[in-house]
Amino acid sequence: MKFLILFILAGCLYFTSPANAQSKKVTVDTIHVHGICEMCKERIENAAYIKGVKNAKWDAQTSSLEVFYRTDKTSKEEICKSIANAGHDNDLIKATDEQYAKVHACCKYREQHQH
Image (tube, rainbow, N blue to C red; front, top):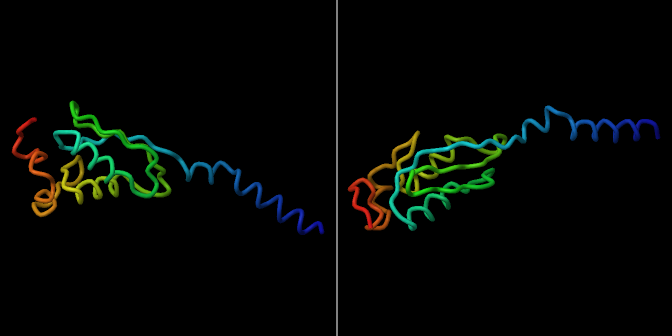
């Protein structure tokens, strides 16, 4: 019986320990992501929502994506990779020409026409 109580107590201490809590830390990063319009905004934010991302908001005027994510689930690099796969160049990864070609015609930010 004492062993069972000690086992339960040790388990409780493990789940409330600072080391375990720190591994679930939420980080905020701002990533510069190229885009033009509301369609770009939706595509960028959807691409940013991978496992571990808690919130993502892209601002068209500043081309900045503010992203909140758990560092034990994902990384800035993984988020940038997902955004590039959706066709949008960002701080870390440039979308391939094939990925870029898939964005809607009005969203061709490399041609820099605004609407």
